[in-house]
Length: 235
Image (cartoon, rainbow, N blue to C red; front, side):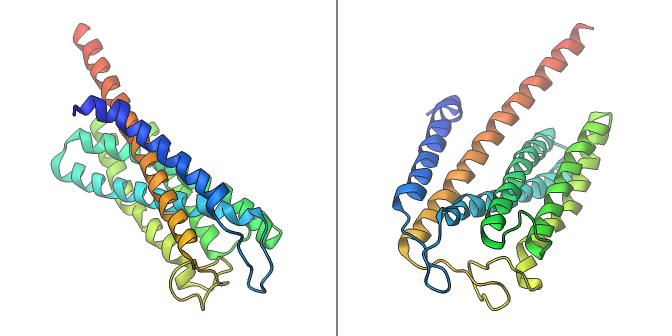
C-alpha cells in the first residue's frame, strides 16, 4: 500500500466515514439526557459531543507543536518546523470551535454566551497564545530565525494547555467536570455505554480529521518550499 494511496485516498475516506458515523450517533443513537433534578434536557446537550472532542483535539494539536518544536531545536530539521506550523494552524481552528460551541452551550445552560469562569477564560487564553504563535511566524523574516523563535514560543506557550485542562480542578468552576471527582464543579459525568461510546467515536473522528488536515497542510508546505527553491535556482 503506497504512501500516496494512504494520504490521498485512505485517510480522507476513513476520516469522512468516521465523522459521518459520529454525527449519526449524536443524532440517532444518543438517548435523552436527564438533568440533576430528573428533567429531560433539550437538544443543546448534544453539543457536548462536538465540544469535548474538539477540545481534546486542540490539546493534541498543541502537544504536537510542543514536541516538534523541541525536535526542531535539537535536530535543525525543517520537517519538524513544518509539522509545528501545520499542527498549530489546525489547533487554532479547533480551539476557536471549542470557544464557539462552549458559548452556545453556556447560553443554553447559564443564559449567557460568555461567563468569566476558569475553563472558558483559560480556553480563551489558550486560543490567543497560539494565534500569537501564528502571527509571530508571519512577522519574522528569515526561515531559520523564524523557525527558531517560533519553536521557543511553541515550547513556552505549551503551559497554556495543562492550565486549561486542569482549570476546573484547580479552581472552583461552573463548568461541569465529566470525569473524576465532581465536588469542585457544577457536576456532570458520563454514565451509560451509549454516552461513553458516542464520545469515544467522536474523539476518534475529530482526531482523524486533524491528522488529515495536518497531512495535507504539510504536503502543501513542502510543495511550496520546493517551488521556492526551484524559482531561486532560476535567478
